[in-house]
Image (cartoon, rainbow, N blue to C red):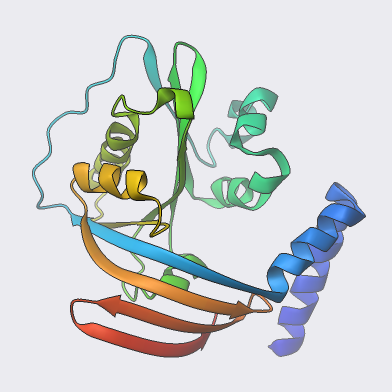
Length: 220
């Protein structure tokens, strides 16, 4: 199994080098040697009452998945999503995750991903592998209009409509504006995760919740 894992990583690195070049590959490798992450994890459940989400006449919700990935993502949208920095996230959308994009007046102003049963669930410590809303961003000029809150509500209603009973979202503990929008969308704090990752594989995790502090060593 270890040999297979090494081969998979080597093949992935080779493909990345062919697509992105040497400098980008070196940056990619450096980020995988060691990194430390902090996440605030919030949750909401299907028994929470929600009404219809209201969008303005000049606002539009775009949704992407495997069914429309190849023809729906224009070069302009890919650039907005971050170009080469979004390669992994977009590949996951092609494979089954969801991408929500909000436009206002024809301009891209918000994006958010829904990830399903990924290594991120194990990384954060979600044993139930609930859908996770992640990698959200709202353009500075569009902030203060409730777009983030309404985007989250739209994504949650999509998941509840597909039979999911629990939804998680994570954000940086220092991102107070994001935490405020998450709470306004009906989420409540679940736990804080601090993770130390070596070689993008070996993990030491510290989770803090109302039940106390838990440490765990794992591989992802």
